[in-house]
Image (cartoon, rainbow, N blue to C red):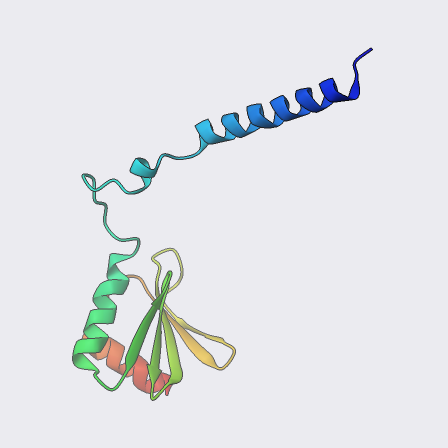
Length: 119
């Protein structure tokens, strides 16, 4: 029969084995931050749109949140802009804030019309 101390040794060895297994399966830090192979940002069109808003519409503030831009004026949210070719290019509402979806970077006139309509 196995004594209690041997059960403890077996349990600790099992936990160490699981930890080592998990450590070998974890992604390597060099793979996460590979500087040789720089890829494009997740949504380059959003960056271009944000730069366009900052350049041509200085009274609007732009904050990037993941896959969308929050456009505000005097700290009041005016609109949310997404760029997704899979969704229909349209406007919908999320609460009282309009969500504007484009398929690609919008023109300055299109952006101006949609921001005026959102207010």
